[in-house]
Length: 374
Image (tube, rainbow, N blue to C red; front, side, top):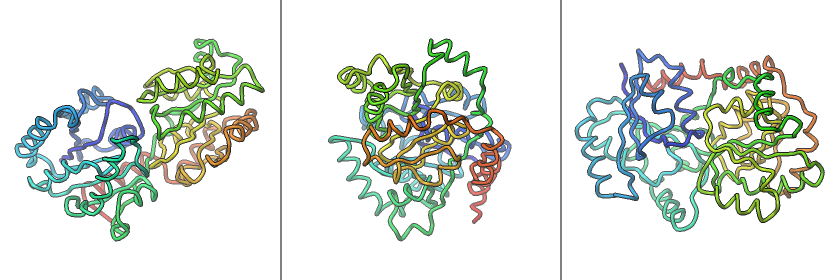
C-alpha cells in the first residue's frame, strides 16, 4: 500500500477539492491510500473521505495561532513522517512551504508541489505579503520538492522558474462526465421548486471572490434585464465577496434578479436548471467548473486569454475578452439563448477525444504517484 499525505483541501468544495476527490474516487484503494492534513476544522466531503478509511489531521489556523500551528505541525511530521511514502501539497500560491520543508526534514522521500492557480488571488495587504512570499519561494521550491505538477501551462508559469519547466508535469483536471449528464426531469423539478419555470437562467458556480469576478456578472445582468424581464442569475458558492456583491447588486438595481444559493453539493442539478453558464474569471489555473458545465452540455461563455484554451471541448463554448464591456457579454448571452444543450453522446465523445476522462486519467496519475513513470 502506497501512502500519501495530501495537503490543500479546504471547507469549500471548489476546483482543487473536486480535483482531488474525482481522482481518488477512481483510484484503486488497495494500491494507494490518502490521508489529509489541513488547517481548518472541517474539509469538503470529509465524511466521504473517512468512509474510504482516510485520516483527517486538523491543525490550528496559522494566522490565528502561529506558535501552536508550528509546534503541532512539527510534532506531527516528527512522529508520523515514517508512515508516508509521499507528501502531495496542492497549492494556490507558494506563500507557505512549511509542509514541504518539514516533510524533507523528517524523511518523506517523495514531495510533490502541485500548482492550481495562475495569479495571486488575494488582495490588499494580505495579497501583497502572499505575492512577495510567492516570488521568493519560486527560487527555493527546488530545495524542498522532488516532483512538480501543474493544472495547466498558465499555472506552471506562475509557480515555477523557467529552468524547471521541463520537469513539470501537467496533470489534467479530468472529471466523471456521467455525474453531470443533463436530466430534463430534474430540470423541470428544480425550476418549478424555485418558481422559475418560464425564466431564462444564467448560472455561475464558483467561490464568491475577487478572482471569480462575479461583480462583472451584475453588470451583464443589468443589460440583459433591459431586453428581458424574465431573467435570473443564480450564483452557486460562497466566499468573502458575498456581502459586497449583495450591496453592489442593490446599488445597480438587480438584487431581486439574483439568487445567492450558497455552497451546494448537488452541482449537477443546478447545472440542469441553467440555460447558459457564464464564467468571467480574472485568472484560472484551469477552471474545473467549466468542465462540469460542458459535461452537462450547457452553452458556456468564459474569459478569453484567461481560461486555458484546452478547456473548450464542446462546440457551444464561447470565449470573450474581459476587455469588452458587460454589454457585449450580454449581447453574446442573448445570441446563445436558443442554443440547445449538446447531446450526452457528443459530450462523452468530446471528453474522451480530448483526454478529460477520469477513469483513464486516474490510472495514469496513480502510476505517476506510485512509480513516478515518465
